[in-house]
Every structure is written in C-alpha cells, then in structure tokens.
Amino acid sequence: MRPARSISATGEEHLAVAKIRGFASVVYGLLVLESGITGADDIFHLVALTIVISIVLHSSTDVVVARGFDEQAETPAWHGVLRRRIRTARRR
Image (tube, rainbow, N blue to C red; front, side, top):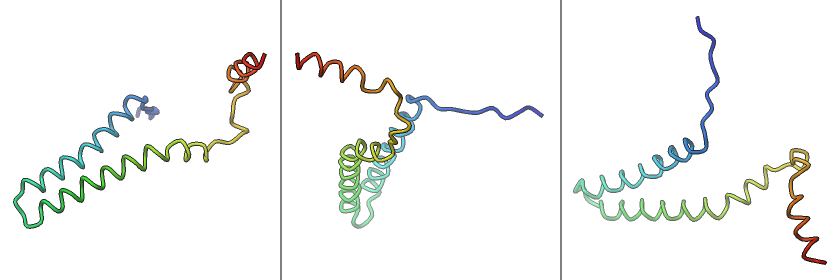
C-alpha cells in the first residue's frame, strides 16, 4: 500500500475552478432560456441578476473579509517595511 500524498492546488488551478463554476451559471441560464418553458425569459433574467449581484458583492467585500481574518501575530516582521521607508523618504 502506497502512502497518501498531499495535494495542493496552485493559484492558477483555483482560478480555473472558480471560472468554471461561474461559467456554469451562465450555461444553466442559457439552457433555461432555450428550453422553451413558460417563464424562461423571467428565469434567465433572474439568473443574470444573481450573477451580477454575486460579482459586485464578491469584488467589493473580498479585501474587507480578508482583513477580518488577518491577525497581527501572523504578520511577518518584514511586512510594510518598504511602505514605511517610502513614506519616510517623502516626508524629508
């Protein structure tokens, strides 16, 4: 029996999965629109509105939520050194 190995995804792989999941909503909306069922147009518009609201909410809250998870104890000692040096240089 072989030992289990850890699997870690790169940032590009996470982005690819996110794109696929986001695109699936568009495909489902188009499938409903082309199905010819009663109310397909209304359902498609609801799906489109949901996608737009999702994009706006995710893009406007990602930094705020990420900062909420940030702990000062986890911040490396070198974090912000360059920014402080630039600020100090501008004041002179």
